[in-house]
Length: 313
Image (cartoon, rainbow, N blue to C red; front, side, top):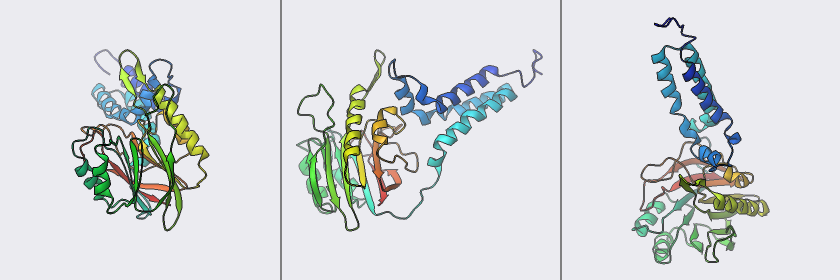
């Protein structure tokens, strides 16, 4: 009993209600509407970051000496583990068949040579780059070509490969209302000794976050639907998708893409912003192949961190 005569079961009802709210947001995030400020997509972008609410509520429940709140805190903890617990497990499988790097190099990167050298240090088989500029492109070509002699560039995206490239073409992911100079997608066939696969490189439009319009992602979502259609139409069984999708895998804006590639990858790997990463909007996904050992590389001259993965074909 406290000074008011309430038992441990009667105290902490507000804390218990907050715990139930957090659990509900985790479990039913897809039910949060996008009609006002696309709040549903914003929630899903940072969904794993609801985790800190659990220890905060736990400490508050202990200080309040509330049995009801302590029991209620188990709900968000259990739901979070159900959603993300598998990401805490160590990666399984062997060394993989391909080492793949994805990096938005930033069009204002002051050190493209140093960035390219940092990517080459992991001995990749494939490197996908976004925000390439005409002035920086020669530096990336010269630095990467020793180990990755095959490459293709379409607009501001590029692919470097240890293995021959065939059937390289632009990928039309341009939303309506954007001028003809906007080219941020390519598709190529990569011929490895063990398999032939299609590689799609994409840089979806950025999202905007503001007090007036909330989370603005219309163009990104439209571009994602076009990318999803291209993946659906892809005739190769094995597909690797690399790119800055300006979206986390939990964001419903990526539904059209997720329908055609596997998003499962071990570990919490955040790539943006490089100064204090809170989300992974750079993605390495695959179809009829497994993405393993995903990790972020040290910062380069970009506002994104590079990510690298092993892929088993």
